[in-house]
Length: 292
Image (tube, rainbow, N blue to C red; front, side, top):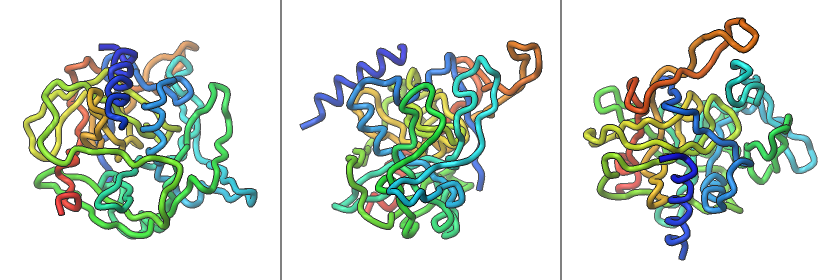
């Protein structure tokens, strides 16, 4: 199924419902990542608003006018690949949820291994591309939050469980916490969508993917187009709109090839839809804190 069809399915469903370092990631089939300005569906845009980037304090400049400016490196890939030259300010991704009447930020466990990962970084919402020619990222300070404490964290070699739950410095306003699965598990072959910050880029929405291996009780394998920086991204069931899990591991990100000018350049590694190792997603039902 194409991304357009997945987005349409998600839109209809969501409308009906309205009342340490990890292994890298990769592209499966076509590169289906879309910038926020390329997406018109309001339901998906609302989901994207609950996504935040984990950005180092040194890359968040207070402009003293109610805004901050993000800084960092630029993505350097072959000129005919997507997103060449975009800012890569993010380290990981995270998403807003609510549990027992209180808000939390969920991310990957390998993104939050100590209090220094809490103290040294901000969680920045609205880090997006609003147009194709955008070159700067100035964001309202109201969209920038500090980490108060790590409430729960797991990074297990034996079970491969990988998640963290964070309490932010204040209540998040202007966006709706995401709904997530609390029991059972996603169907094998179910279509899924991911929203996050691949390679630390502004937020991307990517679909045209499905659950490839559903046998493990802690995580499932998928063919989502994800990269380092997507760690902690929410993975949505395209049919129900619920978060099924947290993107945590995957295949190698980049390789080298000849570019349009004949010189060697970096490009995403491409795999068939059933090829390579797959991208692992920690199930939300494996998050201990939410079982209490």
